[in-house]
Amino acid sequence: MAQGKISQKQLEILETEIEKVKENVRRMYLGENNDLSNTRIKKWVTDVEKEGEKWLKSMTWNMESSDLWAGIGGGNQGGRSVNYAQRIAAMAYAWGTEGSKYYKDPDMLEATIFATEYWARNIHNANNPNFISQQGGWHNWQYQTPNYILPALFIISDEVSSETMSRWLSG
Image (cartoon, rainbow, N blue to C red; front, side):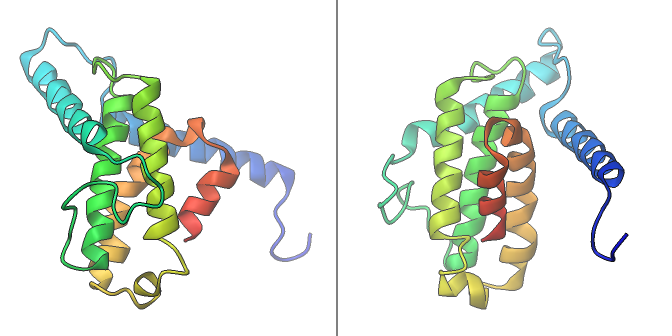
């Protein structure tokens, strides 16, 4: 086998391992079989729901807008990227959390996908000079943004094409 090429068997193993990672991320961020009779779990689910709802209801549905949320700020492009990633994650968590009124809700999913698409086109984009120069600090671009966006992408990954996911991640 030529160097750099993987066999069909290796690809199958890799796909299986990726599915395991996705399930682990979903379990870690969304819980599993959430028992809403437990007051701590109920409060956690309610908080997740409210946070996602806040960003769903305040979002501007305009891909050409300067921002999807008024006053998103962040002080710089790196901070803005983190703020977007936090809001996208909150909506993904509300959509994916069993017991949330937004669990598997098509409007919450649509908003999450729309916001992620906006983020990918306008912020996490190789044509954005601030992305290339990492204006706002490496910590925002290489640590904080991925810390929020990657779990969100794992949560919604089965709902978008692999081409879309690849484009979002590639910048």
